[in-house]
Amino acid sequence: MARLKLAILISGRGSNMQALIAACRRGAVDAEIALVLSNRADAAGLAFAAESGIATRIVPHGEYPDRAGFDQALDQALAGAGVDFICLAGFMRLLTPEFTARWRDRMINIHPSLLPAFPGLHTHRRALEAGVKLAGCTVHFVRFETDTGPIIAQAAVPVLPGDDEESLAARVLAAEHRLYPLALGLVAAGRVRVVEERTVVDAAGVAPGDASGAAAALLINPAG
Ligand code: GRF
Image 1 (cartoon, rainbow, N blue to C red):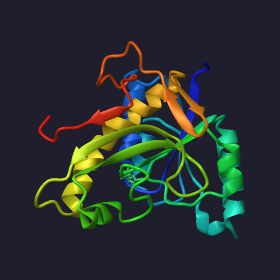
Image 2 (image 1 turned 45 degrees about the vertical axis):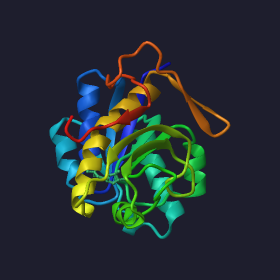
Image 3 (image 1 turned 30 degrees about the vertical axis):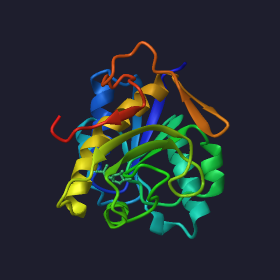
Image 4 (image 1 turned 135 degrees about the horizontal axis):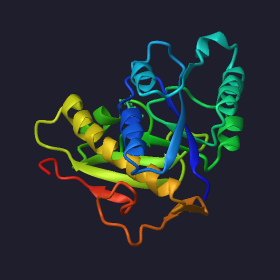
């Protein structure tokens, strides 16, 4: 399988982006990050990417009359950088059906819940309200409907007595930083196939916990 040429799309802090950059740099993920793109000029992650020597691009969504126009501008920027695979990492724009179809099985996202539970916004608040005992995060291929698509990998963390949105979000975020590189590593190594809208993950012969391709399920002990 040819080496992936990635774009990471962000809208803010970019801590998952940082985890992906680090994993590519240390060779845990065999992929080249060709572009970090944001729809917001004030996304904090842009500075980190630029300091890491990665090309950055801002495509401000407000400058386009509609979603289709914005998505066309995205496509142009991606084509200009020779990108063949997209990682959404806190990218807060809905994409059109045409864009998601064009990038089908070539675009992945991380969401801070154990999908299909709690898609969309205010994930942690809703998880706490529901009283779940396990929370977590999911990396999945992107389909048109928000936070849907074949699941590649998930990590679970406990919900602890006394948790509030902030403490739960922080525990899940730490898991995200382990899970996203792991999932991208599996995809980049050609170990993930989509079959009838579910993934088949070949994790054979890989040590658990190895971000280059462990089993696609992580159970994280907060003390560990
Ligand atoms: C993460 O929790 C991610 O799962 C969600 O948005 C947040 C982005 O955080 N989609 P960061 O920008 O990666 O720090």
